[in-house]
Length: 131
Image 1: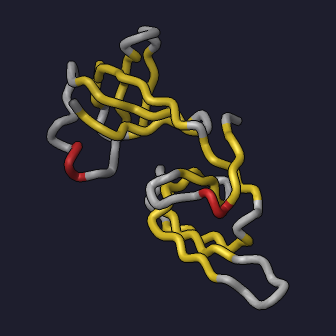
Image 2: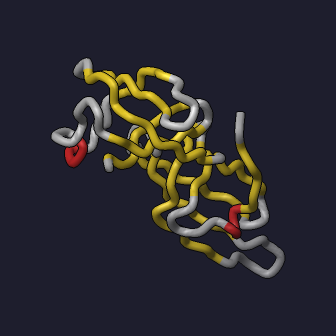
Image 3: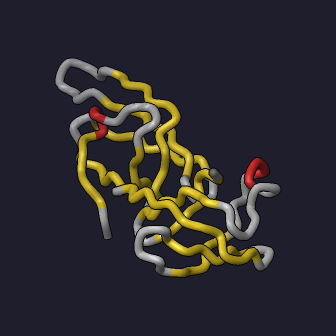
């Protein structure tokens, strides 16, 4: 699995973190100092990259967390079969099937021949932008 490690205190809004095995984008962080001898804690609210589920992580700011490595690629749509799309990577010319994006703004732009930016995160692929 392609991951890096960082501490909870180094996370920022917009960065990525793995919570419960799911890659997520951080949308809110609140930090609280505890008593005299306690460590500062952070409450991290994140949204899953793949299913938009909300996840929270409450941990000391010095705790190690996994950060997914996001590989960004450009592909071209070869075919649209309804719920799946056949893509060809424009660097390697590899072809593969990928799930149809659920975002409404992509629906009318997904056509054979269109170029898309897709991300590979933890061996899962997702279309993030249609050019």
